[in-house]
Image (cartoon, rainbow, N blue to C red; front, side):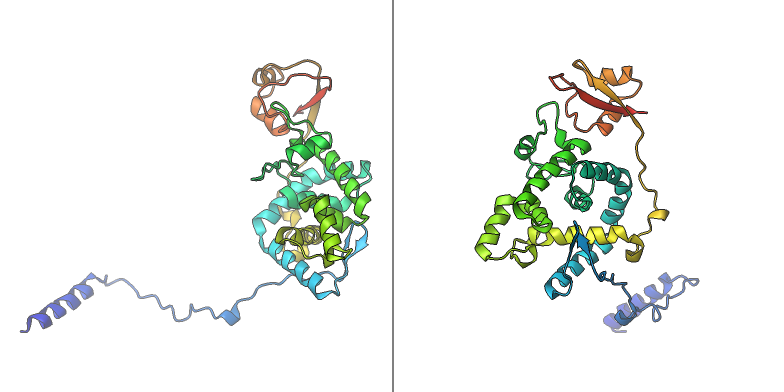
Length: 297
């Protein structure tokens, strides 16, 4: 017998012997999914949308399509949007109250949401906190930033500072869309682009990619969070993060070691840091200002 033929027959015989008599071949002929059978639910745009009391013109094809893009992105960016909804249940009441106290529009809470998704985020450029203040801007608007304290990480104090910045910007632009854009690229950045391009509306400005999307991201999150079920999110079925019950302790003297102090207060260092992220050291030196530390109630 030809050697080549012999080895070919032997190879086939080995393959046949390796197949278990009880094994079954899986028929995949009915498993093919046709592209035409796939179905994605495309979120719809509302007929009208307001931001800080101003109606957005959705008859402009460019405005409509830019908003459509951000709604689709945030509708299908499930983890981020879900966490935003869960955290908003805890933090939006605090932010809403401070916005009202500072005579700032309630819709600005969505600017905070897109800045940090309501986390104590730290950007590569050094911006920190819910409102993403840079160190110098934070100090300019009354926040303390030093080796022991960083009030950019205080929800209450950073929100009050953000209100002051936004109200100052709006006193210049008299337009909350431009004001919001200035939070991303600076007051002078927006002012110079308006002068260069001879326009007066955010929607008519040709801007860098980030600022060009910025206001539309705010609008998209506002639309989704005001009517979440329409976009596939069901807050009633989520374990929304509840308000944390705390007691406030006014500090009247320096604390040389927060770890020991926490134990003496019946809690621990970790809880102190979670509830008071603005305490960035393990000690607190009292200054002319009294600080308030929150403890679990």
